[in-house]
Length: 544
Image (tube, rainbow, N blue to C red):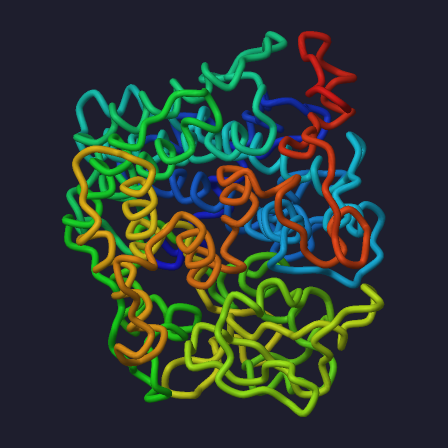
């Protein structure tokens, strides 16, 4: 967290909450709690705040040393998986974006080609890395909550910190439920091997936590940037209820509308000021100064990055540098090089109406400026997945600031851009979808106004506005992709619309050039085989 000054607090907090890879389940234990005692870390509210920084940081960075620590010294949070690849937002991209129509990756790292091909197994290291990452987040939160409870009894400020840690824990379990379904529900540090919970139990826990902490969180817009307030609980509930029918066979669209309304009416605002004068305000959401250029007013929950203070090869460094290859100039994105990895499939490009085609009839320009594709030297069709210049590149994320200068790291190695986890724009889309699915408490006219607000920002004018007749569920699904692509929501959306495993194909889905249907088991990831091996209480997800 930039505004909680990670570099100042990480060492003390990490020593208190570091974990070892020998604890491979959700019941992770501190590596050496005697290095710094609980009294040292939680002597007062200031020290508790420093420990809270590590709870947030577990989703942003990967250890105490920086981007690549020494496994022997226990500097990475997780030992045994690639440190950069196990960072949370990078793992979310791999599991929730690369598996869909929004991206394909040319790298041949073991297990990575299987993600887009939808042929992964229970020993896939990327699936395992995400499980460990979320387990780590739960462990840090549990440790913080337990150790801060005594101080919170007499200090309302620490009580708010505990509510924030509970939100982070609920968010981690939200993702565990989405990705793996049936995981252990561990709410406190224990030496006992945890039993397996089901999706209903996890859903109920996440729901109850988000409802219970609301009055303990800061008022809307009342917290430091980078820390959550009560609107984060509203927005995550909006998303949780939108997926309830998929996850627990209970339609909760009215509830989704209710909490969408609360979030929308809580003081956050859609960023509409075109600071850099390029015809749209959309791109500023993904620039290096998105914590101060106005975009921050739209970010309900974001993970903060700084090229000097929070170095990682995940986060926005991955989103910017991995997407650069071919004839792209890294300097144009404010970095010192590119990795030539992910780019789009034509299925994503086709979501945007073209304003100009090349001599072969392929789109190369769009009136909707949310279509942030690089086409020079890139082919529209993909014949060879491993070749970066096949498939349009995506330059959505950048280490440039709104004034054209670069991020804080003078070397250009690490990126400043914060990564939004929940934006107000998504809540607009949640509201519209819940209305179309029959939820009570909303109306189509309001839904249409929210959709057109997003489109007007993308186009820079009203030329892209749609009518009530255009407002269908299929349109909403496409609009979600146009607005949120590469932000980690696509797999979840496609499953909710029954278009992930069948009913909709995209290039190289199922490892077939034109795409093909795959087994229903792919709606869930397997519980990693190493987790099953050490915990006899767990049963593998069907089909794995």
